[in-house]
Amino acid sequence: MQLQVQFNMKQELYKYILGIADNSLILGQRLGELTGHGPTLETDIACTNISLDLFGQVRSYFQYAAKIAGDGRTEDNIAMLRKEREYVNVLLVEQPNTNFAYTMARQFLFDVYHLAFLSELEKSKDLTLSAIAKKCIKEVRYHERFSSDWIKRLGDGTEESKAKMQEAINDLWTYTDELFHQTEADKAMVSEGIGVDVTKLKDAYYKQVNEVLEIATLKIPESKYFQKGGKKGIHTEHLGYLLAELQYMQRTYPNMEW
Amino acid sequence: MITETQDIDKNLIEILSKVSDPEIPVLSIMDMGVVRSATIVDGIVKVEITPTYSGCPAMDVIGDDIKKALKKAGYKSETELILHPAWTTDWITPRGRKALEDYGIAAPLEAEADKDVLLNEKRLVKCLQCGSTNTKLVSQFGSTACKAQFQCDDCHEPFDYFKCLK
View 1 (tube, rainbow over the protein chains, first blue to last red):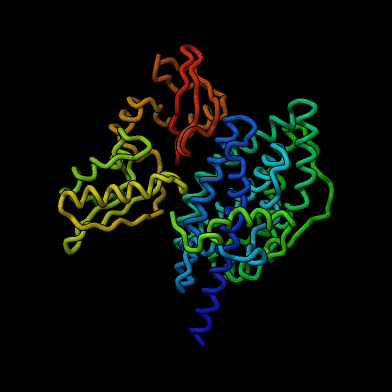
View 2: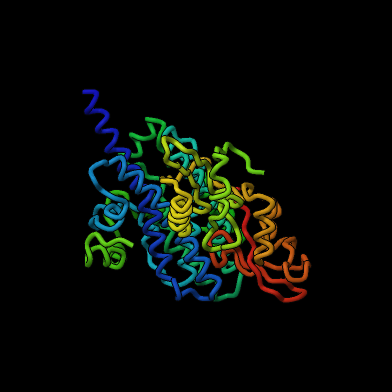
């Protein structure tokens, strides 16, 4: 009985880690698409710098997840060899780089959440997760500063930049509520003092986001219609294409290493 | 200046001081503060290193270089990457800061000042070419994850600034 409970807890912890890491993995891949394609050299380098931070963070999470699984799985297997329905990232992070306003709006809407989430994960009873959070938060502070800055610059910029940023915020708004949905793994880990209760982050999140939107002279979207599904593996059509590119090398040359 | 506990065997300091950061060759990993411990247990050297940034691609190379340097000195070794306590720019030694500046990278300011310069609200970073602090932020992200891009408005020299990480 005791062993069964421990086994279940391990399973939940594994799933919980994937729930955190998949967001960074998929967002990192999206930003990586801009390598050599950013609108200016500086923004190109910034987006790929942020991508590199996120991939670094993902490696820490997946190395830990692989250790917990303890069945020979590696960080690369976990990152590259799951099927679409097995990825549990939120829908927000898989949305495409439609234009630079979308890229920055997506980043901003995620960064504000990410920062709040990591500030709580720092207090986790799980010492590895707490150590990873303490490391990541230093990097994510820079991300959030960068993306907030661009929301203000484009929102309070020219007529055209404002229109584009408003459109991006309006379109991506529908994916924000999902950030605060609890999964079964979340609930199990919250009750163990390991996980973060995301429902408690919601009010502060919208308050902070709205403050930045106001400075940016943008309208706060009023729609109460929200999309969800990513946390359960039900994704928008965009994820499949992203995974095709992400997984290409491992599928073509199985077990290849750098 | 290096705070937190750092347990380095006296016999190993000189060897490890010769290993440098591959992206900033003038800076030894000891002055960078990434070596957290180095001890000899049953004839095997165990070295714990910590990354500057999570995605720092230099860490694998640093791990290999440590093993090579120790092998040359006749030691078998193992390296381990640890995340806690997280690295901070406070761990760069005064000698390390000087090495950075001699190499053309402005050393990190204190946290508050760092925030001011990275939001382009104050001009505090000293140009390494002419010494002026009339310098402006070009980009918060530079050639590597740990640096930002600056330019001097007096002599027009573009240069890297090592961001404060706390």
